[in-house]
Structure formats: structure tokens, C-alpha cells
Length: 160
Image (cartoon, rainbow, N blue to C red):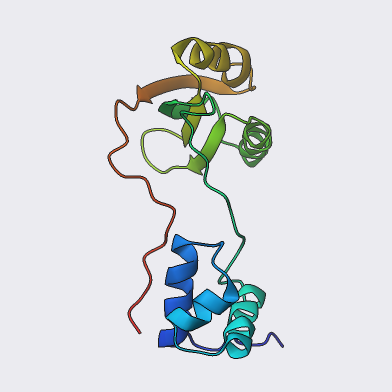
């Protein structure tokens, strides 16, 4: 029988909110901010990791400084959406570094991709040499971002 996760309390939610903003914070600083001593704070963080609330820690990079300033969203329609074709597309897309996100959609197209490249020329290469060469891709529509108005990685948390 699977062990049920302990419900999140106010302190757990505070810890998650702080870690979303700064995953590099020291346990001592975190404990101070949530009004705990370091040992019980660390135990809570370990429990949140163990129970899957915290999936991983990441470092967010500046795409403009790393020649990945062009942000585009691409609607992809497949010729056929059999289980095998969807699996093959998923597998191929996971291997392409420029694809930051890939979502299977309901509605007028099959997938929505979020990609980053250096510029329009490198986007054109990506489209012609990588995306168009995935079997079963019927059609794509690209929307290039002119300005990132809001970009965040944090998840809205419930109120305790």
C-alpha cells in the first residue's frame, strides 16, 4: 500500500515559495525566513523532495547572453495521430536542444513547441533541417515573440 503524503502546512508552503524564488538559498537562511531552526527546516525540505513536491533544482540562464535570443512558438500538425506516430514524434522532439517545451494539444493542431535559437537564420535552419525532417509532420505555423512581457518558472501555491 502506497504511503500517503503528509498534508502541506503553512511552513511547508513558505518553504516552497522561498525555494521557487531562490533554490540556492542556504538551509540556515531558509530556516531563519520560516522561523525554524536549521535541523527541522532541513528535514522538511528533505520530506518535500522525497514526496515529490520538489522535483529538481535549476539554474536559470540569460538566453540573450548565450546566443538564444529568438523565442518562437510553433504549432505542429501531424499527418496521423496514431499512438505510434505520437510516440515517435515525442521521442524525436526530446532529442532537439532548441525545443524548450513541447505540449500535446487538443483543438486545431497537435503540438505546441516553445523554441529558442540565436536568430532568424538559425531558426530557419532548425525548421528545415530538424523539425521538417521528423516523420509525419504535416504542417507548422510559427509565432515569433517580439517581447517577453512575463516569464516565470514558479507555480502558484495554495493558501494555507
